[in-house]
Image (cartoon, rainbow, N blue to C red):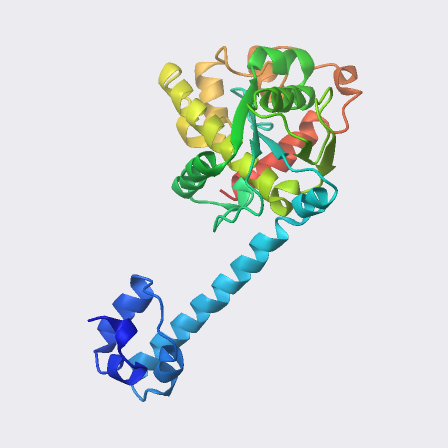
Length: 299
């Protein structure tokens, strides 16, 4: 039956279960006037369906408003003449093992992707992967960069994160006119830039980069789990969880464990890292750990 050719009254002749499946479960577009007719229908099931459809409408409108707000920084820059705007973010500051991974992405103007958000706000790992893959297909270009464990130990995690972000920007196939970065600025960045506090929640470009960085690093840690079994890397991705601490004490440190991080140093019987190593950082390793661990605990 073609609902577009029927009046709301004719459509309501069908059982509520059929209407629920068609319009709520299958997301068939609502014919004009049907929602109001459902609200006037004396059947309790019809009224419950109307309430569910109204709630979905409110949720969709709120999501549309959120997505519009995500473009405020990009719109301001385009008004100034910048067109190719890259968002940059990293993942993996807090873990005890594995690289730190960054991503840079240039989105089409006013790009709308339902569910686009800071990767830490998306608790479903499969949903993160789905969104990241869609972003990769839609983006004008994207790239990832990473800093290895040896570089983290040599530079410290803060500067290693900046190095990974610079590599991600340099890996873009298109040179950006402007770069938006989550919470910091990239040394030797080839384009003008702006650091935005909580940028992964406020900028569509940075949010997209956070999803690509997070899913890329997660996939890397799953691969490392095959090389170093017994540590649970595929589950906790190298973060300092109780299971990871137990494995460290029982099995010892692997080559991918960060020797500059205190829990790993304790297992190896090494002295604490000299604090002077971090004197030029605006964020200490402890602060970076605390910030990212709070995000990890919400996943």
